[in-house]
Amino acid sequence: DGSAPAARAVQRLYRRSLGVAMTDPVDLRDLAVDGDDLRRAGIAPGPRLGKILSALLDLVLEDPSRNTTDVLLGEARRLHEAAN
Image 1 (spheres, helix red, strand yellow):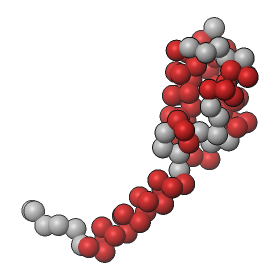
Image 2 (cartoon, one colour):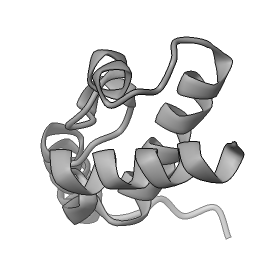
Image 3 (cartoon, one colour):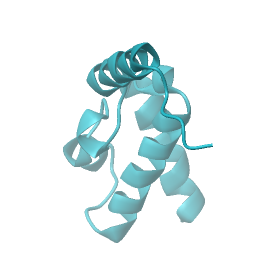
């Protein structure tokens, strides 16, 4: 139909998007753990560590409340053991 959304709707969406971008994790740097934490947990550096970090990001993108050190380290250990 070619009609544009109302300016007010666009403003609401913009404000909501900014809020999400500022509070919810959106990339690896936003995780509560990093590669150093995983190495300290006994996961060797390498491609597997990167895959685990990516899986942790997916987990947190599904549910941002999971972005805690305890939850992510537990999941990282589980993923690491499952791969062995």
